Amino acid sequence: MRYHEPQMISDLIGRMAVLILTSAFVTGVALAQRPAGVGPPPVNSPRLESSERDARENALRGAEIDAATEKRNQARLEAGVLQVKQDFTHLQVVRNDIARNLVARKPLDYVLISDQTRDINKAANRLKTYMMARVPQDEEKEQKKPAELSSENMTGALVKLCKVIDSFVENPALKNAVDAQQLDKVKADKARADSDLLTIIDLSENIQKSAGSLKAAPK
Image (cartoon, rainbow, N blue to C red; front, side, top):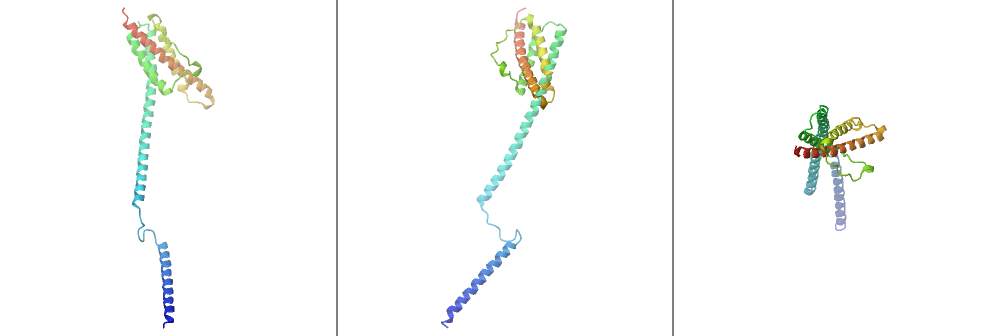
């Protein structure tokens, strides 16, 4: 009995080991073949879940911010386009009022002229901002401040203002679609439109100031 006992124990341990390994293998196969959602739940990390939740919330907030920013930008663009159209039309309306009075040879009303040229100057300055009008580099130089106009040359200044406004509003760069095959002409037209617009600004400002001085002068 003493001789066989170690062997019996050894055999028992061997059979138990085989049984355990076999059971483990079968269990592993069963778990691998088990449909999703069946079996014990996975081990979750609260910290990982919190990080994932924060990432989702940040992504949603970012999308909302982007959408709000795009909406504001679109609103600004639409408002800018509307303002440009209004200023462009207003230049012509006031120009026509001035021209009618000149053609009718009405006495110069300096109060009216001051108001008209102030409106022209405001509209032209807004258009300058939207058009980014600038003086060409080869023409950039220190410009002398124009002298105030007298009553004798006020009519000539108003005629010139009307003609420059005509040149500006009829410029092909502002009326026609851009032709990629005529970029040089487009650039030249844009440069001329810029020059006309800046002339309108300077001339209308000078006329307004001169009209203000003339209306205040004793008669």
